[in-house]
View (cartoon, rainbow, N blue to C red):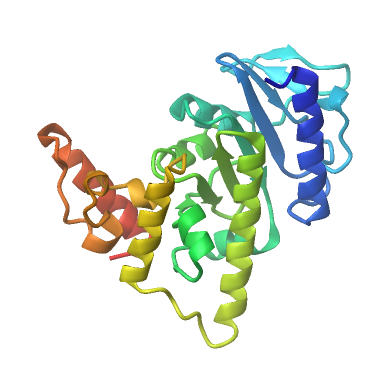
Length: 266
């Protein structure tokens, strides 16, 4: 297991990658890592993520109280959003927030990333919904993001940016990289006459590959309990499938319909 100093060094390295790849400008973006049930390392507010060193990193508890911060540094103003993810997704160990050009462009345009255009994006991300706009540094963004936490590992933030989370810092960052690559390709293909989308059958085969690999996290392939028995997922059955557990039937149907309507997948 990595010690705290090594994790801080890794956070600084990821910060440099985010900055050097143009995913943030100036002091934008933030990164956090869960190191225990009540301890979280996070990047500081008002500091460029491309020029951090380990002593910049702060530590907070699950309620956002500062446990440690060197003089002159304060936790990210967006820590509420990160902590909401940890509270509602016990499997998550790291959260990354950025303002990358293409993904944020889609968030500003109000266009969720739902078009299946390449196998890697389908397997890694599936679909990427848009959480409604919230005022930064308030509970509005955590409340908006909360709607999607149980079903997706990447969310666009309306008129703001993107959020990814996973079971390690490296994995959370890679999802952010994949998200931007997906958005970039979709933008380019739309300006070359429109993308040739994968068929429902092709998408379902890719979802099955993901299930067979036992990939961690949340994904549209796992939205429907039918996938556990090898039946088509909600993305291909139009949300008409039913839970095997009678008590969950209404809940699953309601959630599936809500998400698919928001993503224009019907």
